[in-house]
Length: 129
Image (cartoon, rainbow, N blue to C red; front, side):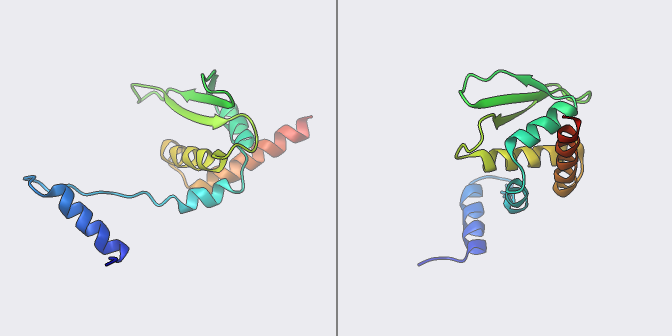
């Protein structure tokens, strides 16, 4: 018998907390908005935006990937975003979506605002050539 999704999550949360003295809530991230936005951006465009906003580019031990790192004044550790540096890798869209969600939290603004700025940075860079 198949349960509707909300019942399944309720059952999962109940099973997870069974035997615990306090209740634990499971929060699921809705990745749909970031995946939709990622369909409009390449990893290269996002990497250009990160560089233009002070993110450091670090080498990666994984061929085809680059690490972008930035330490915020209020953070103990650097924030790292891993993006492909080769267009067309299978998980490019997911990596861009993950990066957008991270930036949404770090910059405290909506994903669409970030996408619009990434596009402006890309356009300005193209015009400078």
